[in-house]
Image (cartoon, rainbow, N blue to C red; front, side, top):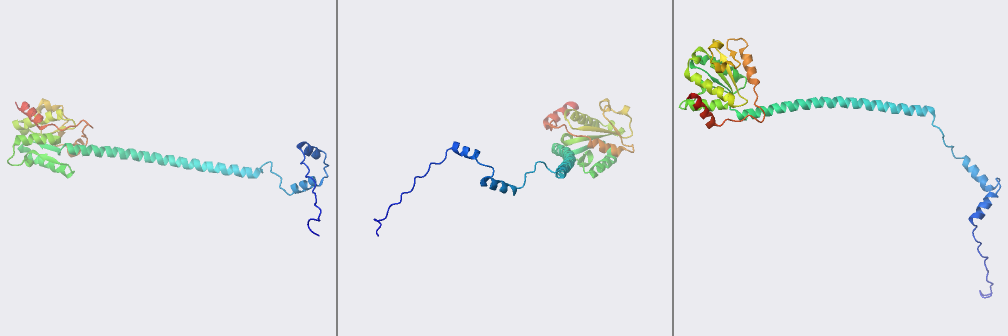
Length: 265
């Protein structure tokens, strides 16, 4: 029998899906014993019930661990604070040391000599002792009758050395007070100290009284060579001198020379 002889099967029309109202009405009319509801209830029994409240022991342990971590953090912060304070102090000390080193470098660039000694030839032994004592401390100095270069002008040498000296040590003895050249050098040094900031003049008394010293020098703080603390006080006087920051300046030779010529006249 051919395919033409077969009867065509007509499928029934697909029913329309239920509306929302029909679904809700069907659910409301369903009995609790409906197999669908029973299967859902049985499957929910296998699921663990949600914990409504945390166990008290677990909660206590958690709070303890948090408190412990907070205490440890506080201790670390306190320790870090102490370390920072120590570092701050070290930085301040390093800064002060650096400033002092900078001042010393500027001072060395400004002055050729840390000290110069001016005296009468009769006091050469005393000047030698003072010069050797200071040079042993690493100071650069000039002694008038010992370091004078032969063949050079005494006046020009004195002018240049006074300008290049940070401290002028003037030995005042009976011989130097009666010597016109020594008196002139004293006046030049005094004028230089007044004109140039950061310099100093130290009169050293050798067997003389203050009343014997010229009036212009009596206001200066003197040192007694015969005093047993002379060496210590002299070193302290040298170390205490520092040029004013940003204000110390080198004196022009022409200006200093003209000043000395005015004093000599």
